[in-house]
Amino acid sequence: GAGVSQSPSNKVTEKGKDVELRCDPISGHTALYWYRQSLGQGLEFLIYFQGNSAPDKSGLPSDRFSAERTGGSVSTLTIQRTQQEDSAVYLCASSILAGAPRETQYFGPGTRLLVL
Amino acid sequence: AQSVTQLGSHVSVSEGALVLLRCNYSSSVPPYLFWYVQYPNQGLQLLLKYTTGATLVKGINGFEAEFKKSETSFHLTKPSAHMSDAAEYFCAVSEGGANSKLTFGKGITLSVRP
Image (tube, rainbow over all chains, first blue to last red; front, side, top):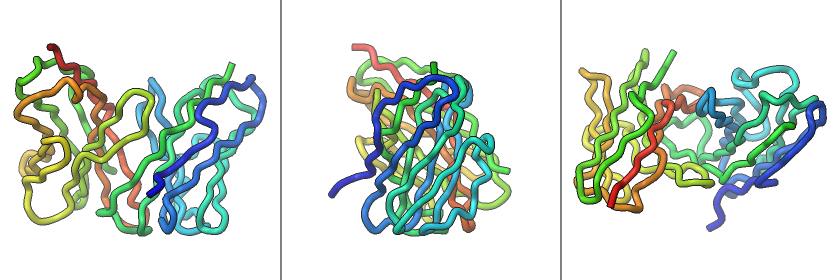
């Protein structure tokens, strides 16, 4: 079956512009996660969705970052007024059950964001 | 708070040699432990995980890991390295609860010499 997909695969933007990153989880997966992978910080948790609600947004680095999920499926991560330090690979993952730590998180290929 | 330590950033082995990638964790509750592999320009793929039960866990591609509570370790091994094993490997921990977010180590790049 189809895995987690993300778009775009690569995004180059200018400092100060807004960007939207999209994640399509595996069909039927209740939980959805966003992580960021950067050279300096490694892999960091950003936000977790259980259905359409986000009970944990603790990893979002600033109020320029926001995310939503609609229909219990697609999620969009938005970064406003991008900064050069936002350059990273943004990874999305989904798992079949929410609140079930033993469940495997399946990762998408990521969106590589470069802010000039 | 939970954390993961992967000592070193790069390991190089000869083809056919033993692979040993170390992972130590810190957790205030019994942890769930994972090893993921990342090939260049790809997402993360689960190698294996420990949740409960048997402490020796077998995964894909001939990898296995042993959960040692007394040593707070979850080292990854493979008896004989193959060229295709060259990748970056991440150890991760989840403390469970309502979130289940993963906390990752810094990752280790494995090189395999012919």
